[in-house]
Length: 285
Ligand SMILES: Cc1ncc(COP(=O)(O)O)c(C=O)c1O
Image 1 (cartoon, rainbow, N blue to C red):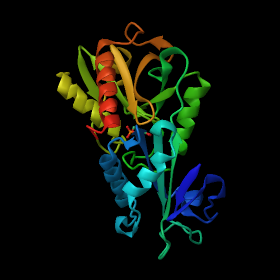
Image 2: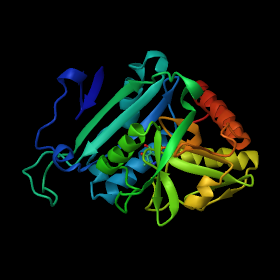
Image 3: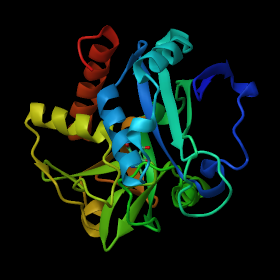
């Protein structure tokens, strides 16, 4: 696997960063995951805008980045079989003697690689999942896409240990998002999802699904469902770059609605497939 590291192109097994890198020592770093369909990047501009927003939020100098992302992405996409997968990129505050406050002159570490999409197997083939409800134990800046992900790691592990694919996170009785996704509930044909604020990561897939919902005339309310509203919803689904749009048909072992894929999910899932196809042939970004 070819990786990009600080301006160099090297085999993944030869790529090294310092043990004093603040990404390693403090989790002092931000990242992005961008889907690639047919060698083309899905919503590249939105992902780069979010990267800049994350860097700015943690006090990293966006202008210190000299990388030409479009050239890096094009070369990484070429490494993907059939051009299908994701690009991962990470920017850390660089290597410096360990002290919490920012170092004076550490160059940012920039790393990127592409990962092929692994075809899902089994029931629902990745677009039908089960979830658990968990207390949201994360910090209060969930809008920053940082690699300081220990809380998300523990929550995802809790889901896995209980035989589920996602943990839906409850804070002050509101289900804001998942450990690795945004969450939508359908009640009386209306779509509910948490507003874009510091309690959620503003998902790029979420935004696309909201655009598709508007196009299909599905009413949307920018409000996180309460725990009870979620459990009584007709449908629940999640969105993320990795899982795209996936129906949640069981929560804590109990069926959501009638436990089957719902009509709103089906319409949005189909619209998302069309959207992807248009990205593949280059008529949409
Ligand atoms: C906590 C969290 N929320 C939401 C998302 C979805 O964001 P996106 O659709 O941009 O992948 C992710 C994706 O990794 C995530 O980790």
